Length: 318
Length: 148
Image (cartoon, rainbow over all chains, first blue to last red; front, side):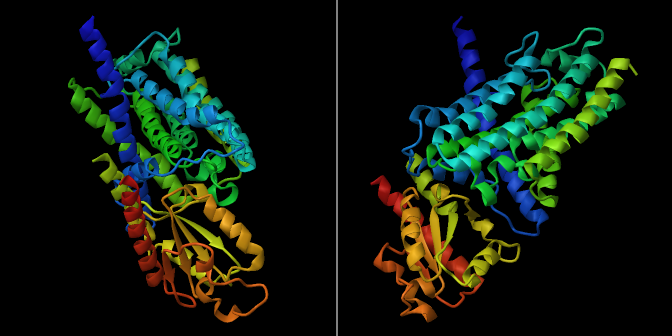
């Protein structure tokens, strides 16, 4: 009994939980900034820059505006952080997974919306009109990427489950070990591309950061945040980078297994770095920010079509 | 150890908020030039923040017109501690060519403490980077002073 509790604590606090996610998330954010700078022919900040930003914000004064609802204002970033850590516990590191159940894909889908909702709650609690515009945009963004994301998850579930849908992430990974990785099946390549395009919207990086557009609506929902709560929100963005890319690895590149957990974790981190550069930094470097209606149009036409093509192909059993 | 880490990070991650108080746009362009690939101030951790709440360094340009003075002071109050005020160009220091005008309330030192003043009309980007870097060092010292 005691050992079980200790093991669970280790899961939550250290390995797939808190410490691991925070460290790798900040590393990914640093690599993103450095590679982006190199792509623009700049020297760029050091890779540990997000760590500096995080500690600096912890040391700043926290101002709570008069118009704000104090509890919701301060609780929102913590709720977002906790949901992201729980999310990572469900995502398998190849054959190893901290928690697994029969339908964790659905739990993952719900948990993925919580950081976005936390941003909306925090923004609306701050009582700023700029935050009002920001949260309405955040809601539209969530609606835009949620549809293709669900279609992608459905096609992966159908592929792994055969006649019945398979909603267990560890079963999906086991299926990929038995057959090939999902990405090696041609029917799922459009779904993988759709998922790669969903990741930057979920994280909120450059062309899809309409909700936090700092040049037009002064960072939207984050406008009134300062000090430690802002540090948490910035950390959440970094964690989302890691969690979303790790989810992509689990869904599409899950067929690699070395048998050693530490080595698996290392491969996962390397794959996440590659994916971050591919789907976030590269797109960031070559595009400018979209308008909200163009973002919506892009996701509900182009990305949804890609996901639907995969779904139909898998459903027809080709 | 934690407090040392925070003080060190404060000096290494200064976020800038820029406020124009009737400047001719010359200094504003030089400030933007500092962030472009040629001068790349981001290598010291500088980042342009969208709101005064996120800022560590407030960069003021322009000769403080009567209309903008009140707004400037209100913006400075909204910046969380520790913070630094940097003036860029000769205008906020002395009024420059606008000195004596009925609508200009130039020396900013009358109203708030200015940590670094970068002179010149307009200062070169190299001078702006040096001034901002000095401000970042002051920021770290201010944070250390807050620990004691």
